Image (tube, rainbow over all chains, first blue to last red; front, side, top):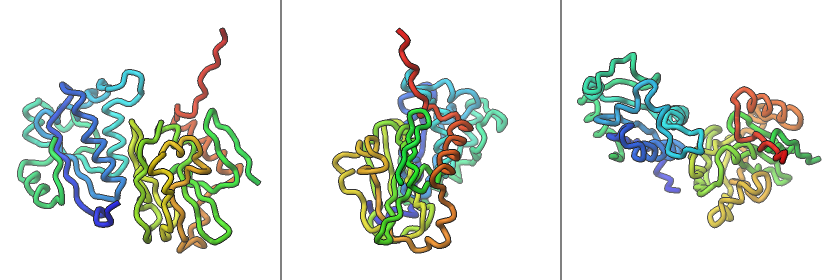
Length: 127
Length: 155
């Protein structure tokens, strides 16, 4: 493992949501992997990615029918690993979502914040 | 003396010392080093292990990552159960990470460390019956299905 990996900031941008389930798991998996390497990891949900953060939505998404693991499980695990989750205010408006509709533990931010986060990150992974 | 206790299909080896909350175990070796691995509960939860990506040699604080462990459905850290120096990683896991599933308390060990604060940190470990009971409680409270025995076929 690269010794300089520790403490790096990784920003994961997720633009895919519940309409494309196969594009939802991997970004969270990478986020958890980076967190397990003692990196600081942020996931920014924007555009369609916002849809997976609506209460009751992620529970319905399951890639493996034989598994108990849903997209909601993945989101909870990601938080447990210390990954910070952010959502785009403007995208929430697009989906008619209010703060009450949002899963717990997700912070709402505006567009300027994403620019700031991008500038502050060592690497940005865009999905 | 080493004894194994089964909780469902998960095994706890009573001579080892556990941090149940982190699913890690340690063995205190005669040369003063400590061998570290993940528990049988953890490997059952993870499923077939595909990669074990260990940190390089060097100092780690208690709670920092010693290795990233990946299965098809899970990825997460093996957190350092003690503060100390990584002396070596189990090179056998590079070619055959599945040994963690087959022998989590034996050939599937992950790293060996030289403890730095063992006098302070030894108190956090559970061993013997206390470890078994703590794990039994955690499995019940969190409804960890990975340890559930498959129902016998009555046919």
